[in-house]
Image (cartoon, rainbow, N blue to C red):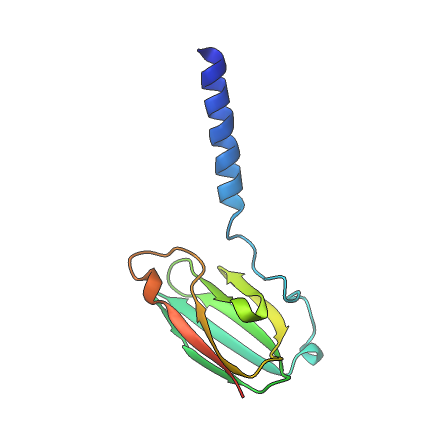
Length: 126
């Protein structure tokens, strides 16, 4: 009985530590946020609050190196653009190259409540 209880506590502690680490990264694997102003051509800050992004539409030119910064102004949110390997969680920045033309959806990558599924935007690469 004690062995089963110990095993259950160990699994619970391990699960809690893994879950606590989820969503704490401020940048994606697209690039590091510690770059200088000369390393990008376009800078965009997106504010995230209660189930909306502002701006919800971002326009850049193909070939731009984009510094994208996410600021949470209400709650905990993320911003994910899978086509560019961007997944900001909470507050942070990432630099990526807009090397594909088109319209790409972005959404909140952190479960944030009842309106989570409606938290969307568009990246337009011209």
